[in-house]
Length: 546
Ligand SMILES: CC(=O)N[C@H]1[C@@H](OP(=O)(O)O)O[C@H](CO)[C@@H](O)[C@@H]1O
Ligand SMILES: [Mg+2]
Image (cartoon, rainbow, N blue to C red; front, side, top):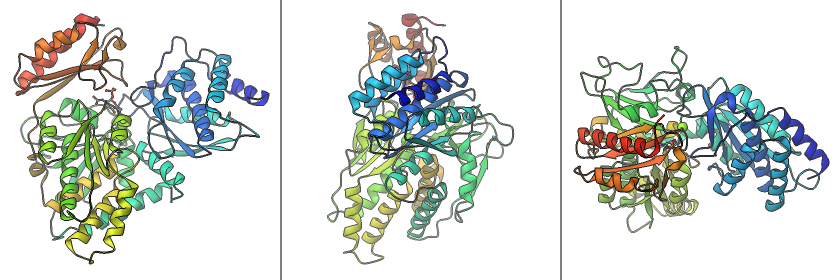
């Protein structure tokens, strides 16, 4: 690294001193924490993104400022690789190191060593780098994006392009499109969704299936606002949008997909009286997750159609198309879930004859496994997921279609699969594209939300969070279903599980919040609640509570 570069890094990082005792880790989905603590972190992730762009021959990298479902006062930052996927995991240790470097000098030394190891050239000998920035609707994002910009451009030859307020999946989609040389603006994103949605609607056999109005809970975040924009392009979606954030509601506060999925109650803005039986959907704060729900009657309890049920609907539809092509197109279809998947959904998917595999929590892990298939469908129970189509498989479909007679069942099945591969975000889970696919499949099947819910009956489950002095004291196996540390806790958990019919429970440290998560499942809700609470008690007695 030459003198000019060293001076540039020292100068810019002295503008963003690291708060004392800050200890951050890249975690399940990037760095997160109280927004006031993050300027130095975001600035440094800006530097990292520039280096990543230089390393990957000037490909465009994405940097997203968001803390998704966390409270409004939090924020966070994560990086998108050129393909739109999450930052390659082998750069995460470097991200951790620079985020925690205690002084500008230490930061420069770490960067210098890393550049040597990765053979990254800067300035005259190196190429140019480009980083696209996006942020969710959090007010703190405005100043954090400036910190990112300064970080990016403190690496010589690198520029930041501020793309403004976006959903996380929009930024990933745009970065992917840019690197593929495709149309890459937000308008292109909307047009792509509109075209493929319309194509799927036109392919509905009877085209007569009527569907009732959908009501969206936008979590008072960016998703509702973007959905309003998209509505302007769509002529065939009857949707009412609530919780856009303009009516005084607070981001993620008693609204949004995370709240609805974990609490299993109606979000604010939805009423027991008026909304009985209505098909409703919730996005999370940065619109990369969705869950559906409806209220049956009386109280504010809901019937939840979570990520597992969305996954099941998608799997069924894909399978139906592939069955039509049996003998013509060979394909490997796989489903990826995590330990949080409801046991009943796994049984159902296996019953469909699908290959079901498990990955660790965090979409980066699920995404990776899904790429092993021609069609890989992955979802976390909380509603984050998508369908990946391998490029080879899509080319094969297009090739085969040329031999089929237009309008035949086979031809239509291929057209549907190709349209789904365009509609559903190939980079990352996307609440907007997920919503459009759910809507079109329901219309295709002629199903109400209630009918869809009957695919299988969820086993009662309960999730709780336990605040402990040090959540890293919990170490789990790679599948996260067993705790290796603290010693003895797993045996104690097993002792509790044995007391319940169809009992299953596990603990793991959260990667996004300072808590240990407890998950429990059993044959009745009472039992699931009681199992969750005894396991939470064990966590407190082994780790201490605060
Ligand atoms: C149980 C649960 O919902 N965990 C969520 C949550 O991760 P934790 O590591 O559990 O905090 O946030 C992640 C990022 O949004 C999401 O991928 C994941 O599924
Ligand atoms: Mg999110």
